[in-house]
Image (cartoon, rainbow over all chains, first blue to last red; front, top):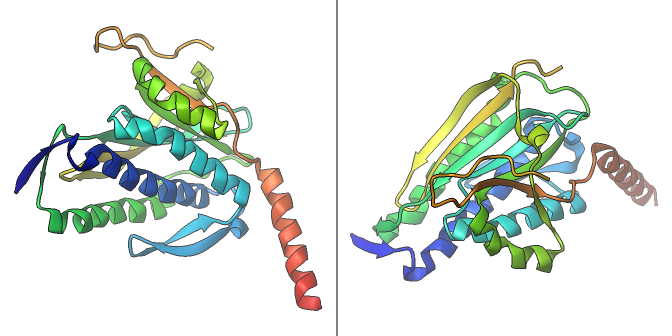
Length: 210
Length: 47
């Protein structure tokens, strides 16, 4: 067993790579399961050794990639407290929020041979939970759209500035309307604790969706 | 736009919630793309 700091082995970068790859799969799957887009744009793929649905719409895929590219520096520096996939109704009011709450240890104790396979196993469970979450959620109204929110600190936004310019993908502070949800029902989906990251996923669902 | 949360405990460094300025493609736009792709594929099969 070895104890490392975040600076060793570019630890933050490794965690950010793993999490962003996972978030990409999770976002595609949420959009499929919650029927934000027609099922015809999704294709079955295998990720984490389980079947998942991934979009093949170029513009949507690029949008998700650009979003995660901008979030990555925050995750790398442990500055992304939450990444939230929000599903909004026609009036742009949130009806569902898939909240990924992320925390990373400052010190890392690893046994490297089991580390990655163990993390993959934990992430697989998240994917499986997302793929069946429609059973515990009410149907969404027609015409929903989505957005990805990131909860961070003001000072940390500087880590994002460069990538926003590179990608021509600017970020803004969310309005109250985009954040506030009336009487949300909380549905815990999955929690993981590993050597490199702790994460919990829960859904906040608006009581009255229509 | 106003910041949505008051300052946090971490030395006045405010918590903020950010989102992309750009919107993802609308469902209507995606439907159009899907329909165009279906037509293209049926044309290709018909050749």
